[in-house]
Length: 164
Image 1: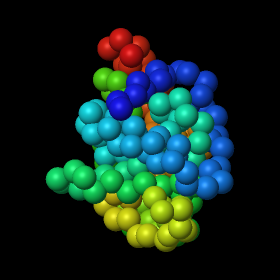
Image 2 (image 1 turned 180 degrees about the vertical axis):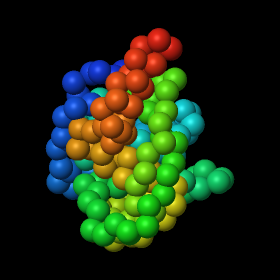
Image 3 (image 1 turned 120 degrees about the vertical axis):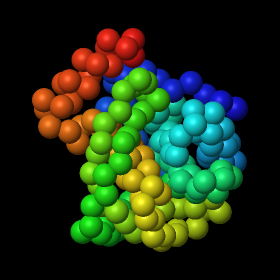
Image 4 (image 1 turned 180 degrees about the horizontal axis):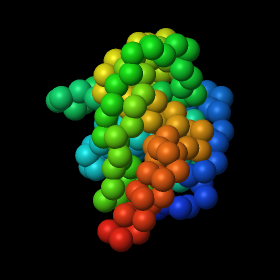
């Protein structure tokens, strides 16, 4: 089921999400809705707080073909590469605007997978950017928080003008 993304500046987008104790049928159903929502945008990732669910759940799919979504509960970055990568990032919570954000090119992430098993996985390129973007959402941060105050203010003014 495709869910609505809550609009910025909803305070839920500024709150840290609660940890997930176990992967249950309910968690799997939320992930399924998140993947449907991500694919409908279309996007390469989605965090549960973006749809108003205050749990540390994320999905990412940086593949060219789709259908490769990685489901994550409680993702945490264990290691980030020193090499940086710039990418134009956006959010369905603040449509119509985007900004180039620089993040580590590769990350190692620990998370509970769809089977409820702790997994460590390396993500590179677009996958790594998306994972980091989703973890920011889980921590109550938006991509534009990584901009200078001047650039952030300009982006938010532009968002208001485009009707976001």
